[in-house]
Image (cartoon, rainbow, N blue to C red; front, side, top):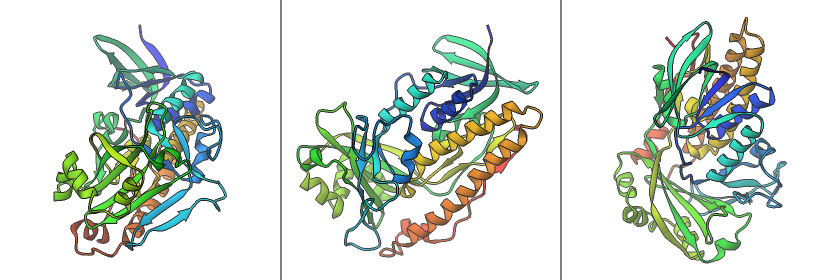
Length: 390
């Protein structure tokens, strides 16, 4: 039997769930298809103070009071950027209060639960395949194990992250600006990190890239954990070394702020090194008739911007509104999709300017390939708006 939906979303991360939440509030019929049967292990991330507004429906308090187990208040940043001496920036005087350090697994589950409460259906271990499009609707095949069912939807949304699998299946090209890659490792703490509530994010530049560290709030671990991440260009000698625990720890031992933080807090490495692409990337066609991309599938942000998670949820909300308006005005939906495209295009242009300015602040290693690449002027095509995929 064929099942009909207003919108089918591929991917159940923050962008996909934010889209479903917005559509659910509009009373629309939504299905979220998630390829993974079990949620993927996720590293911790930090949200700037202004971004907390996006989590109003899923956090129970502010600045450390009655927050869920997957979130803790973040008081600010300590960074060695442009200078070897650490500089501290506090959020105390922010109009929005403290930031948040979140465990992504917990956040993803909370957002998905809210989407489900608003009526969105959710399938795990399910892959979505586009069969064609006719009479303004997509014909889709949803596979889960050996089972398969046919669906139709007025709109499909790519929320599959940097892979942009749904867009790729439609032949939509994706542009990457640099080979930045992240290598992360968790550390157990037996010392001060256990009482470091409301602590600071640490950032430290080095000749071959930059390091990031913060605590990972989670009720799943009896011992407090800290995440340490190296960002370096894939293919560099340091990136090759960082892919293995021994090489990662050897590079870490040469840092000042990061190594001092771990030593002071009695942190010991656990597990393996996890790697993932981290550079700027954009789908060339993020909006067209019957299709939208959201979050990292649309525009993936260099993590130095601290905007990736915020933009994922923001783009999901914007996409949900655009689709709700388009569905209520089926005679001329293009204007609403174009508005969504224009909003993302403008923010992307601002991000690229900020990206260049942030990296330009670090001038200690001008001849190293990592910094020379970011100092040079880069062209990055703006996402296009197309009427049809084919």
